[in-house]
Image 1 (cartoon, one colour):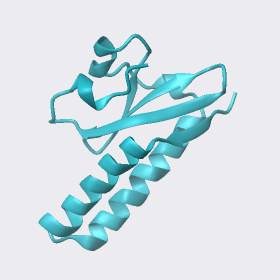
Image 2 (cartoon, helix red, strand yellow; image 1 turned 90 degrees about the vertical axis):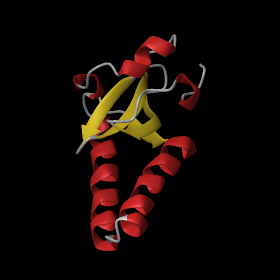
Image 3 (cartoon, one colour; image 1 turned 180 degrees about the horizontal axis):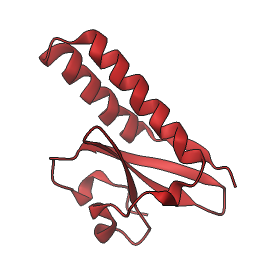
Image 4 (tube, one colour; image 1 turned 30 degrees about the vertical axis):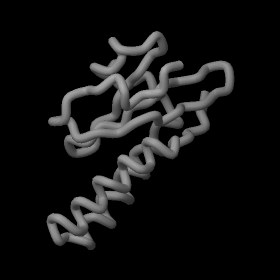
Length: 107
């Protein structure tokens, strides 16, 4: 089964924030553009076999299943909605940042 991948506004803002950090703070705009493309391409791979990814630490904070995809120490947090055939990317963070339940939708 192939799923439709949807990146929420919250997750997209976290991804763009990391790209801005790379481009501006680290003064690497070309690297930031390449990184952003790599992350979005990786999100698209969730259309096939999203459950290949492990449960995220954030899974302990919510009643729904949360999995993660690691892209160079950057985590895409997502849930699989079988009823609609959708993979919903609900958050993103650097792997060194501690999980925070307040960053995730409640249900």
